[in-house]
Length: 353
Ligand code: NAD
Image 1 (spheres, rainbow, N blue to C red):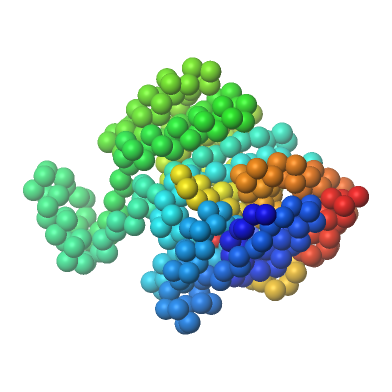
Image 2 (image 1 turned 90 degrees about the horizontal axis):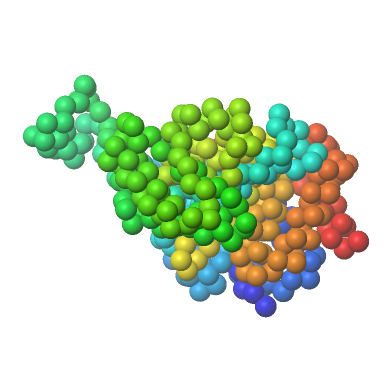
């Protein structure tokens, strides 16, 4: 029996979580779900969108799967998703992107793994508001160090990239490549411009790459990488990126495979793992039984593999691929008319047949 924290989330989260849970249970795998609420809805009750008991549940169970959680823009509400990654030091954001038959896309045969660093870079949360005392002090300090800004009425976000942070993410990418029989790791950077942050990331990736002679090592400048992914995605295999480029490139890769409704993801640390789809809470579709549950269902496949339930994972993957390929019981984004729960029913029928 596995005990797993389930955070349904908000917006479309609860309905896709329910679909995922029914699909996972249909395989017969023994899971006890420790259901925990987080996000804006618990704010009034606990004074925080991420109460301690939710974190404690993940710390105890080591594994969680979650639906998306809305981050209201400009409200001072801290993103629960970013907070979880920080609190649990989930330094890897793993986002596979693969083509499935039956999904309309401009591309076929996409098979990419994006390994995104999850804790550093411009997401470190070190920011100074324009006009604040701290921003002005920093600007004055920078002047004493010969760093001139074109305009001083600037807000400032700091981009820390460390040897330790780069080393562990790049190592994860190579270990993953080795374990999954992948051939190549491509490091993404803008080292020609940001010599001391991206330059460091590039240097460390090359050093780590030398320790894995069985895996090909290469690197690409991020802008070129975007163009190459659009023109020749078949040239790439495992792609390792600092946080911000990883965020953008993984959405680009979701586009290559036919949209966010299909993109699974995982946040992994040394001790804990939180599995979640790439997409957000799509509030306009909330409660309509309309959206595609595949991304969260495919996310559960990653989770089941992580806990050693490979057979259940393979059955879910096969059933989901078949339902999508047949195209009869699929949601609007896949060209069908089925609702979220009907698509889940069709996947369950396949698993049980
Ligand atoms: P979104 O991913 O929620 O939705 C963008 C659009 O993509 C939707 O309007 C819909 O057309 C489509 N889409 C997304 N998921 C789909 C699905 N399962 N099936 C079919 N179509 C789907 O992105 P957004 O509108 O930028 O963000 C909405 C909220 O979600 C924001 O508050 C954001 O902060 C939050 N968010 C949360 C997470 C997370 O919890 N990890 C991730 C991304 C965004």
